[in-house]
Length: 575
Ligand SMILES: *[C@@H]1O[C@H](CO)[C@@H](O)[C@H](O)[C@H]1NC(C)=O
Ligand SMILES: *[C@@H]1O[C@H](CO)[C@@H](O)[C@H](O)[C@H]1NC(C)=O
Ligand SMILES: *[C@@H]1O[C@H](CO)[C@@H](O)[C@H](O)[C@H]1NC(C)=O
Ligand SMILES: *[C@@H]1O[C@H](CO)[C@@H](O)[C@H](O)[C@H]1NC(C)=O
Ligand SMILES: *[C@@H]1O[C@H](CO)[C@@H](O)[C@H](O)[C@H]1NC(C)=O
Image 1 (cartoon, helix red, strand yellow):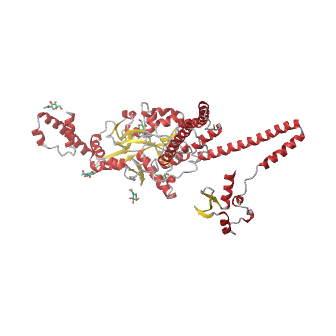
Image 2: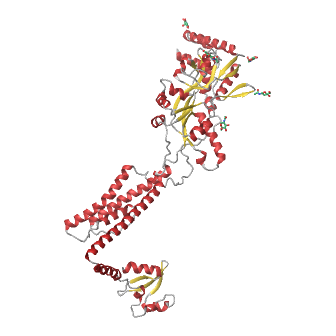
Image 3: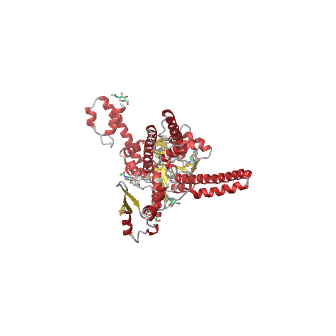
């Protein structure tokens, strides 16, 4: 029955089929009865229409930019916003005029908060309809009727945009803590393991071709490999070579993972807000601000609502409900100055941020971080259906309901809500598009490492000094007991020992083995003589001067000639 009624209602939406007699004549008696009751309904509606025609209504509303708000002109209040677009449409269609009534306080109202509320006006029957997007709160049903649902309101949170989520810890980010710990453990463990295995091998095989490296050498090798630096150790035994290679492979894989992950982390890192949902707010007891008398307040304070978990925070003064109507001011006062989280419903939030964005765009043209100091959470704080209100037993609701339903179903309400907003998302969570340059904050870790390194070096240096002084004292004490004479002898011996190390033969002497005087050597003066004298040839190889010189067995030897490299050569090959 209900289904057929609905279908018929759909067919007869525009009341054109009221007098369609062909339907009733061709249909069965059952349907004729249906149509007759439908006809009765239509008659009632037509009567209502007539009653409303030329009538004067009172429309209550709330200040809730951009959904409903009022302007005062010449002493009369004029309703604006999406709600009044709808009311104006109804007024035009049903030919009525209306006055706008505003409650004393700008609140929706609840059982415990009635005085001066929107609900009170409707309850007194001093308004015929409330043109405001009022969330469906269970508590309200005893006082009013809800109209057809206009939209589903989404309340979200806006907060100060945190600095990039990779602050400081960026360099540690590629690996989990457990991985870091294991890397450090292996760093300390592998050196001794290699050391022990070399000794064990030498013991078991009795082969001493592989000379055992000292423990410090092994540890240094492990550390050097981790830093991708080479090592001068070149093991001979196969098992030792395998040990070394294993560590190298491990390090190669580890470092390439680290590099790749760090790159990915810095370029694609997901932006995360500190507070994403109601749970975050409740758990960390974050201060938040919402509108006084709005859906959020009643959803927290009324019994049996979803946000009841936050009522504890109200008791602890963590929640603040502002009477301020200017969202921009609320944003400045609470979010920017006090770092609160501001909870507001979606179209208002978007308008507020868009205004803010346009204002900041004037201040700085290019820097997107200045344009978007705020970020909006993606998970809604609360979702609730919203609709107009009628007083209980409202006379006009049967007339208005189908019209409002039409507006909703045809998407007109949705269009009106998004009317003055840009299509693009304003200040999205990820400010993509801007190339992220590393800031000092990101490199903090490297600075700390440097600092720690320097401090350790200074400490070690200090301790070396102390040890030296202590050792000298000990030595002095010992020598004192032996006698003054011996000390002096000791000291002189020491000095002689230092001088004992003969410096390598001078570079020149290498070329003047055939009895010529070393002082003759002067490249710029007598190159020709010089070349003749050793049967060598001067060549420039890779941009450097070399003497190409034939050895006894006929092999060619290159001897660098330019003075600095010659000096280096001399010291590295003659020591
Ligand atoms: C039509 O409906 C009325 C009540 O609405 C009922 O009394 C009547 O018997 C019905 N007639 C038929 C033909 O079903
Ligand atoms: C609309 O109402 C006015 C009175 O407010 C009346 O004069 C006018 O005739 C009405 N129009 C229609 C189409 O009924
Ligand atoms: C307000 O009154 C002035 C004249 O006093 C008139 O010109 C103007 O149109 C009025 N505005 C509105 C919105 O009625
Ligand atoms: C509504 O009724 C209450 C008493 O029930 C009264 O105090 C209040 O003034 C009335 N409000 C309006 C707008 O008539
Ligand atoms: C809200 O406050 C800001 C800053 O005080 C002001 O510029 C703006 O005009 C106000 N908006 C409204 C609608 O009053």
